[in-house]
Length: 333
Image (cartoon, rainbow, N blue to C red):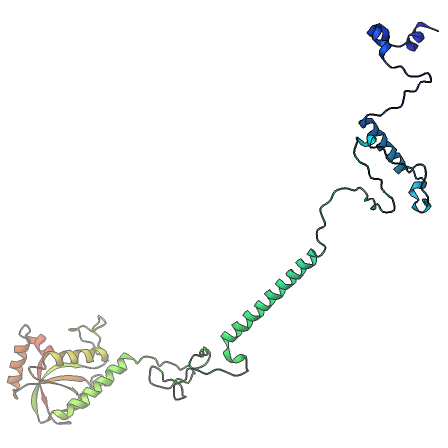
């Protein structure tokens, strides 16, 4: 046997060398290598009991068979309180013990099983309420648009909305008259084109001629001729409204009305045609519209004096172009 083996078999330390004579007072285990039985520490006894219960739970035995425990056995003896730290221990009967719940991962609580059903009912009730509100709103809107649609009738009361596609009806039942005074039947009418100014001027000249001709006696008296023109005539001494020397019906009418206004206080101004008296003269195949001033003087010299007084700034040919004496004889003489 080597020194290393002998050193391994010898104790690491010698108790007597450490404590001296005090080693005689330390209790020694009896021969056989077992210690005297005594109360075990609470922690050690508790650990032993836990290990014993764990071992018993892992290995099936006859105690797991409740049906075979008809008589108490020697193993059914009271538990030692010291093994559990001095606390009272109540034996558990496997026949009445609750079932062991298996260990598993923690999860969220399931809660009241009736709660999901209540939430579903509340959701369904909310949907039904929304549908009812939509139906009521739609019915109310339809009633506002057509109050008679609910009973299939039409409402013709004072508050009924007019139909924009129908013609307006007067209180008596007929259509309203239009602005021009005719009845509006809903059929579009064609607006007449405006009348031609030349035609309108000719119409007015004819009216004045028919008005003035009966007022004068064609007995050979002298009158002052103030204007003499036909439609389309050219007068180099005067200007027409269009800036030219060509005169049309509108120019002739405007000139006559201006002379009628200017000399109406001095004499009576009338409108005649060149075919109304004397030789019934024509100019380029057309009668002339003549403006005469019936002055108080009946002789030719008296009419010439009146013309000189009215146009004092003119003389000679210019005066004769504006005012000249004419004799009204019966037609054809």
